[in-house]
Length: 276
Image (tube, rainbow, N blue to C red; front, side, top):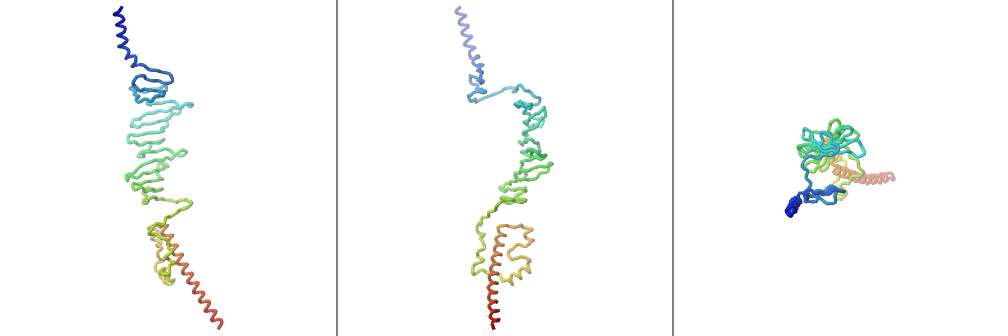
């Protein structure tokens, strides 16, 4: 009898670790009470969750590695990979799949759309067009919209930080190809550019009307104003052009003042001659 008690005690001691190793508690959550650190639905924070094998739920579908139902609908979702080693997150309605997100081996991400050479692309709701993010061989970043696969650049940013709207190769901090609609444009007057108030200084060398006529006959445009050919070739600098036009208005004002003085002198002379 004593030997039997010793044997039973020995069996309990040996088997105790096995019982503890497999001990789980279930209820509002599932907990491994040992050092496996597995908690599902509990308040503790696990550090490790390892699964050796396939995860399956009660809603198995063909060709999807992980799937589940949409509550309140007949649709379902699934994760899968295809023969091109592309990862997909799809939604299904009556078993008709719609790709919501895809990632290929090159790291390109597609939202609702599969387009070649576009790192990130997606459909435009309510139309047959789509949009895409991409970079080119010049390391410029582009946002394009596509209609019938014909791209139209919406915004581009190059390596220098230049931003282009409607143009793929911006040559200034902001380059826009098209019409700008705004309420107001404010231009800073940085040195050496200055307003033409110097025109009203006493020592300003104002061309006479005779000199001005000669210049116009020879050049077909006002002094300092670009010719039509130059405007066509180089475009217009609005800040510079506005200052030039203001200068010409001020010069014209001086000529009008001078003409008024001359007219006043002539009127005096006429009155004197009439009195005689």
